[in-house]
Image (cartoon, rainbow, N blue to C red; front, side, top):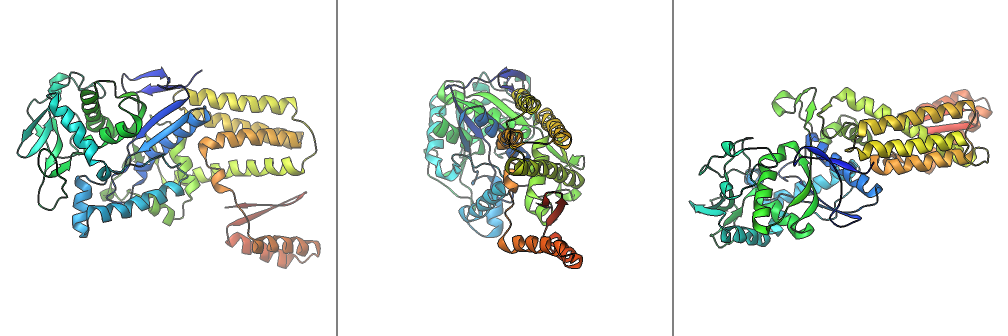
Length: 466
């Protein structure tokens, strides 16, 4: 099976064919940098990270662009409240966003264009729309007339019956299925930043920002555009209307949207006390590897319910994979010499084929993970009964690491003991040999307090991090 995606445009499973063979242009809606990103935001960023990583594993060279919205209603309000400029306010949260990405092992995009750096490009697109008759002025602002674009509603499924001709909206966000003419350029108001334009001083509307930045870095027609399901309308619908009307060509070939994150079965809300940033979860003691695994483990087109118990369970699941990896590494270095046996070759082929089969089917991560853990079980069973030679272990380890190039939960947790801890482990081994069990237990307890778990076995002592 070749790689297939469920395209929001048409709501059908389609084979992926990039515009340029072997290359994929990917645009993902980034954060509005007025506050720390919450864990629901990272559900979308994690889905996009898995998508990009799997495209790369499938042989594509990915050009990934993610915008940073640093001028928008919420950003302006937050900056004014803090008594700083929007640039000072945004820079603080851009820095925090990148820290959070790194903490979760989310690969950096190739470029992160900021809206305020691309005002001229936005003005140019607006001028094209004006020349083609898609705009009108009112009370100092310039609006896009949605009835001027025949294809309006084709992504979200809105029909002409929903369109309110002449009704306008100035806010950057508005209610679902409340289709109205939207603002392209907002006339300046006291307390807001401003830029000069052919329509007077002001600032761009939110929707025009992504049209300008995506076309600059990926061209007017590119492969994949992603976001959360809340972006479908109005934001992505409006992007299509602007971009296709201005450029006269298809904007995007594949639209992929992930479902919402729920917390304890409810929509996340500060008033309900179930609102979390990544930093708040880390302060509670939850590990990045567990949060990452939980966020990527569900199918992107299904709602994901986050619970604190679920994060703990995810950590135990990752620990099982880490223990398996440790066993393979030890066997590949200290096991008996030998080439991979037929049974191991069959298991590895089944692992790689099964993972690919399910990921090719619209990134079906739950089924792909099921194949991984079936293989873990079967290899462990073979090792317990027959043993693993070096060739066996190396072959399985190579396949596991290939899959982890997508999951990225094992590489992140490569543990390196410092010299002091290594010395303690050697001292404990000597104490056991000399039957000084009190000292051996003291060292074990000390290491446990540092998050290092020791496991004694016939071949010596194995360690792992909690």
